[in-house]
Image (cartoon, rainbow, N blue to C red; front, side, top):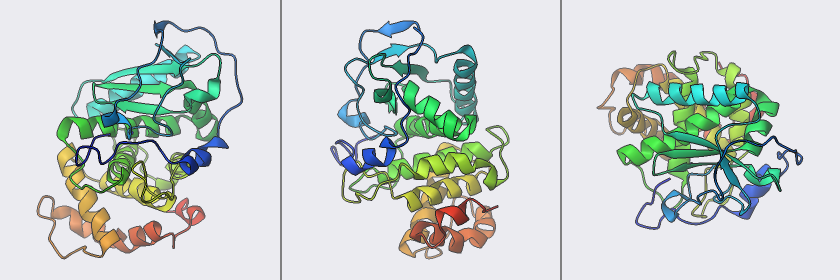
Length: 295
């Protein structure tokens, strides 16, 4: 999950408690079949890319890059999703590869988006996500990681903070948008993506001053919800960025309606009915359980 604000704004490792939030979700060590190995060691992310991870910002020393997952069904699903996600934004596919560590399966509980047009996806996170919520969870994670590709390409997000939060919340929004769009995952009922957003919010953190802060669980829920709502409209990446932060920051800072939505004014009538809901999601007033039943 991205790029450097104020030169080194977003560099650094994720907070320990962030890892703890995910540690209970890891799968037990599993013996995996041999896949075509592309390199002896997996390329580690640069300082520029260290906030574009889903869980951690490094791969283990024993990790290897492979072309597929445990079976062709899983591999084909991810490759087809990659094509669909990129196509939604009018782009060609980035390079999608998978990371395996035969000596420590759980070390691959991660996904990282690289500024060189690559996404590396760990075996452990793939199979845990699939076990917890089915294919849609991995579609969401991949759409999130591709959101960072859009950020690299278009110089997004337009909002900067002293942490990775704007990057991560916008990537969550990109994912929510993809899950709804008819030419994306095409889930028009929000309750249908319950497993996906539950997985995302469980990896939120409360280290609000840490450079690697990804947003609190409640903020991540609201970001996915906002992206889903914006999926009502056909937006390019820059327009999505404008609208995402117009409504997200407006709700968070209480500045909504201080300035008019000059880029897509037609969206305001639709979004106005959800502003109070978004505020309650962000604040936690709408609980994680209540969130599951939103329409």
